[in-house]
Amino acid sequence: MGKENTTASSLDDLIEKAGGCAVIDGGFATQLETHGASINDPLWSALYLIKQPHLVKRVHLEYLEAGADILVTSSYQATIPGFLSRGLSIEEAESLLEKSVTLAVEARDKFWDAVKKVPGHNYNRALVAASIGSYGAYLADGSEYSGNYGPGVDLEKLKDFHRRRLQVLVESGPDLLAFETIPNKLEAQALVELLEEENIQIPSWICFSSVDGENAPSGESFKECLDIINKSGKVNAVGINCAPPQFVENLICYFKELTKKAIVVYPNSGEVWDGRAKKWLPSKCLGDGKFESFATRWRDSGAKLIGGCCRTTPSTIQAVSKVLKERS
Ligand SMILES: C[S+](C)CC[C@H](N)C(=O)O
Ligand SMILES: N[C@@H](CCS)C(=O)O
Ligand SMILES: [Zn+2]
Image (cartoon, rainbow, N blue to C red; front, side, top):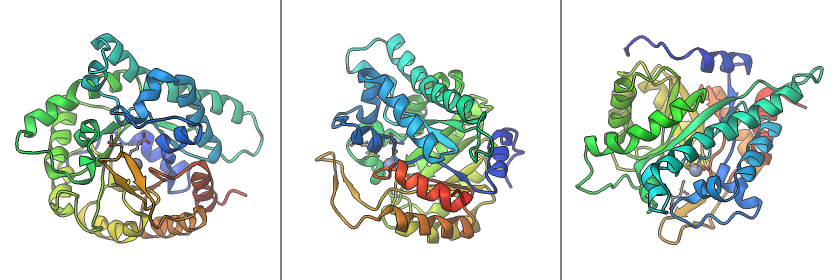
């Protein structure tokens, strides 16, 4: 059993208000691209915090309209060293991290102020989850799907990498933290230790990627990874993001054997990321209708937080939201 959980209430409340299963938004970067964004860049979607912040907010609003209960911010690949390497100062880098949260909070407040006046509306006041991409996301070499960080990367290096960004994001006032595409056990350990050392008081989830449907990308078992997370009272939910949807139902059942924490799943469309070419390889991907029927099964298997990741769009989330909340 983990330590007593002191941070859960806002997330638990939302899950309850949403009828037992809350809807996460879909691929932020994907919807940016729908609007013509070009993100073949080491900063990936975070480039638009610099280039077109109003587009970041527009994408958040589109996911709210689609029925998302949780917005994941644009900070997945936003890091202080990443911004420094573009010639920005530390102050500018930290202010961009803060902006990633305020843009989502502003979108949430704007949407909620309008919708709460509409009689009979079927929306919840959304929560803002600050995205914290893995070290592999920062490396921008696709290693969030291999877990291979090389011999020079140890626990302290990973904690150093994550610490200041985590502090700045938390100070910016999100409702929760979303650790995304964690590919190995070492990084899970680093995050658990950091949440404790920084005495983080807001809820968080830790999501792993998976390329074989059974293990973390590093080949380490999810049992080893979840044993570490189970010991933390600061992690409220654990799950899978940006893996093929075909893997998810089995992984929910497996995770339910491994943890008492809430289970969170937001897979991608099933396409595969080519880290070298920095593009999605055409492959068998699912339409929104298929995603919708999967979502019902994921809920019935016990997932409490369901959404989409890369290559899913507001129309995917609208379909998921409709089926999970029986919106007409
Ligand atoms: C979730 S992946 C598609 C994000 C982009 C990747 N870290 C890269 O920069 O290649
Ligand atoms: N939430 C991220 C993707 C994580 S794989 C984004 O779309 O920016
Ligand atoms: Zn993704």
